[in-house]
Length: 166
Image 1 (cartoon, one colour):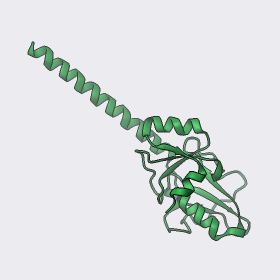
Image 2 (cartoon, helix red, strand yellow):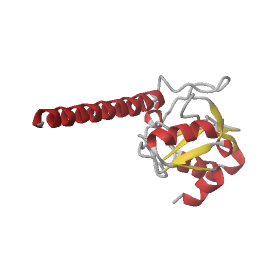
Image 3 (cartoon, helix red, strand yellow):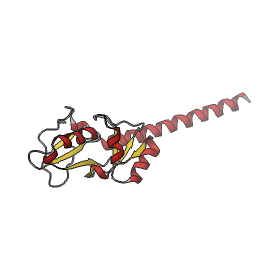
């Protein structure tokens, strides 16, 4: 009888270890899929390569941000910023000179206007290389909800993100 109990406990333990390993792999693959680098930041077509990847608002290296934002300027070089807070602050500081602010979809890498994003906030998976608030932008709500199913969090609209900014 004791052997059967020991086998059952061992089986349950192995299943738990397997589930934890699978969970870790999913999180790791999500993180590597969103990582960027100066060479790997693919800008939208027609946008010239940037000469500087330093966030103009906080000084972080925006090329290392998992959630970079691109600010398109009317005059002067466009800017890659580290996160949503820096994108909004930069746009406010450069009011007449900014034509667009773009988020990069955390799933596909596609660039799109920040006010059309679905943001995942309070996720167990925190984006690296960015300032607070820690949000993952998605172009499609379904992708944001799929991310939440694995990593937790809640979906916020652009207006709701504005309310949580420091």
